[in-house]
Structures are given as structure tokens and as C-alpha cells.
Image (cartoon, rainbow, N blue to C red; front, side, top):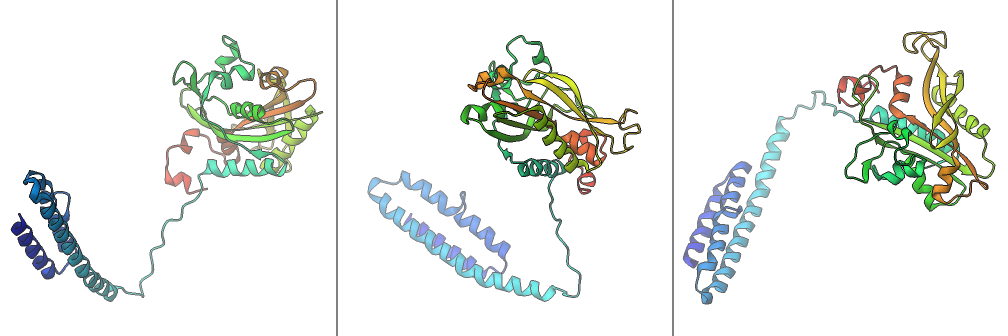
Length: 337
């Protein structure tokens, strides 16, 4: 075995010294030092030797391996210099360079950052939460008990009997209120999931950003003022708004908010279905039942909440008519933003 090791060492060193290319050196390295190389095969066979010989042979095998490795290191440096020198000689510095592609933020990320920046200036802070939730956070704490008909509107995907993919980021608001006493002013962006058929305006996964403000003496006027400020900073100072009564189980009273169509200026066109208005978000005063679920006294505090689909905001702002374009990774589309 020792003689075989010496023969391998002599053979390897001779071939290394004769090598003239990096590729040739790499092939030799795999031949002698690779996982299936000659040294590895010998090391595996040491276990078949008599116990008294194993230690000496193992020590010699490691010395041979180190010697061969050292020869590879000594040979690779001049080869690299030689290759580098040849490459430098071929460079024509008069040719124009090739500019690398510069990455950019996805349009949905850009819109999320723009929305968040507006509310951060209004004193809100950004929070996040898990996408896999329990029924309690997704339904019960939001005033949607088992068998309540409003659950159908917020239907989602179940992973097990009690765990599901969240259908709105309101779940984060519940978690924050459980941890923090008023005042609370937060926005919660993130992905949400609903088993909708995918078409030009629906997707089984989309992005939301929801907001919550809780304190003493918060009124509907505070809600209107905050959201009016948001809409005018997001869509322009000339944007008109209207608040329509609506129903959400976690707010009372509840409203849906429309803005004047940016395409026709409110006169009526194909984009706004000749109505002159575009729906952008839902909002309302926090239902006292939600406060009770998180341990707040509804006699002491009030608050408002709102939520909007980020894809819808982006579609309205950029004039995009198909939500699927955000997720197809078509560079012809994405490079416009």
C-alpha cells in the first residue's frame, strides 16, 4: 500500500508539472483529489488493512494528499498569470463596453412604498404579520363568528382544520392591538389569498395595505381627513372623492370610497363604466365587538380602519387593464416602470 501511494504521488507530480492549461489542471485535480479520485479510493481501502498497519498507512496517505495539493497550488498561479496576460493582449479598448442590465423595483413594490410613505408622514408606523393564520385572527376576532354569512365574502384557503392563508391583513391589526394599548396608528401591507377565479380583475393572490388608528375621541371626521389627504397626495390635488355607505363586519358605520375618474375627469368613459367614479378602498369606524375581542374598552376608545388593494391602486394610477400582467414577469411590461 505504501509503495502504491508513492507511485501515485510520483505520477501526479509529474503530470502536474507538464500541465499547460487550467482545464488540464482541473482534470488532474479531479483524477487524484476528487471524491472518486485515486487518493480517496485508497483512503477508503485502509479499513481492510490489518489493524497494526492502518495508522501508518493513513498518515502517509494524508502526507501524499498534502504534497499533491501543494503542487497544484504552485502550478495554478503561473498558469493564471499566463492566461490573464493572453486575455489582456486581446482586449481592444477602443470598443464600446457592454452595459449590464440595471434592476429596478417591481411596480407593486413601488406603489406599496408610495402608499406607505404617505401614511408614515401622517404618523402611522408600518407593521407586518404571518400569512398563515388561525380562524380566530382571520374571522372570529374581526366579528365574523362561525356560520356568519359575512365569512363567504372573505373566504380563503385552508391548510388544516384551523389554519388558513389570511384573506385580509386585518389579522395584523388584531395582533397589534393585543400587544399594545392605545394610542395605535399602524399600516399593514402584505399578500392575501382568496379562491377567486383568475381573470383581468381578480387573482387568487393579491396585495393589500390596511390601516388602523385607535385613540380617545377618534371620529369619522378623522377618517375622512386622513383618507382625503392620502387620495390627493396619491392621485393629485384635483381628485374628488365620495363616501358611500357599505357593510363590513369589523367596522360600523362602514363606507366605500370612490375617486373621480382620472381618465375622463368624472365625465364618464369606458374605464369607469360611464359613471365618472372609480372605487379604491373600504373603510369605517372600528366595530366595538372588535375592541372587546382584543381587550379594549369601547367606552373609552374609538378608532377607524381602512383597506385597499395595491394592484387596484397601481392599475388606476398607471392605466393597466389586466391584473395578470403584474405576475407574468414579462420584461416588456415591467421595464416601463
